[in-house]
Image (cartoon, rainbow, N blue to C red; front, side, top):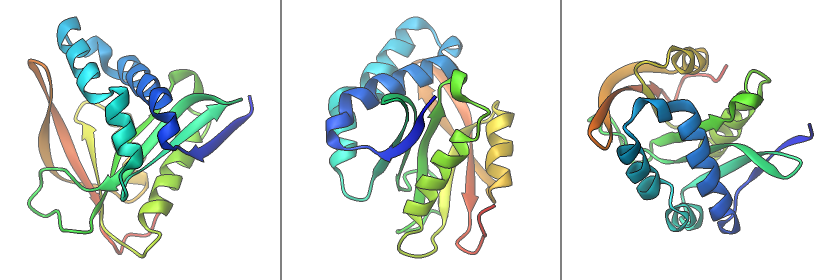
Length: 176
């Protein structure tokens, strides 16, 4: 394997769309009725929607590639989580996914670091993350990196409404 991380560009919209769909289905697809999952994927990961994200200043996406084939991604931007403590200028890690075959090699942590470095490039700021309440592995991953639970919110996928934990790392928290 020749793995590398690079910043995605608008030309990567189709690749990002396919990878975002594949990683979401691999991680969570079993939780939802097929019609709800299909609708969610079409709306959330459409190529045009990914292109908009990639073209929007203040947002960034990184791809983990194995010999040029995308196998993971991270996305970051302004915080959009529904928490009353969110302030203008706060950042959010919006997505962090690595295909199962590439997990446990430290590459998720490297993608995380790329996003955090970018979010902190102009100085320290509070960073937020939403994580599924029934994903203790992800919760431990973020806790090791200075995030703590500060609330809860919902994440609808069709008729299924998941409980998400809202995590935050304060400006003063040092990365692990």
